Length: 101
Image 1 (cartoon, rainbow, N blue to C red):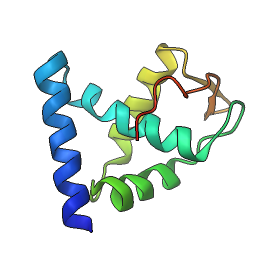
Image 2 (image 1 turned 90 degrees about the vertical axis):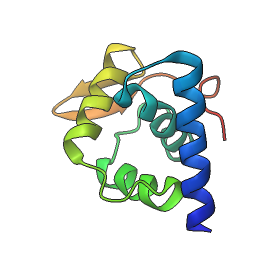
Image 3 (image 1 turned 90 degrees about the horizontal axis):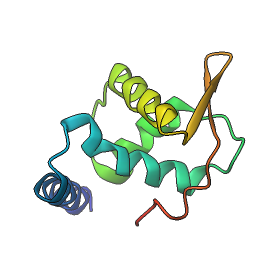
């Protein structure tokens, strides 16, 4: 099962790159959006450890760096998907339209 998830994750990254030519960090955002959509609702505080765990278990991103996750969450903040309060990221946008399983 993990091999299948890794293959699918790689295929999705390749498709996004081929279609949109985004940088490597931007390529990961759809995976994070999917995790947030499936685990959080508006006004929930993001648990960064849960996201790291889900990246590994669901998409086979092993040993995903916390520093990169912070960069991604900050980009999502700039896109008004998240906000930052008391050093915690909070969901502010319903992600139904952005999440693709």
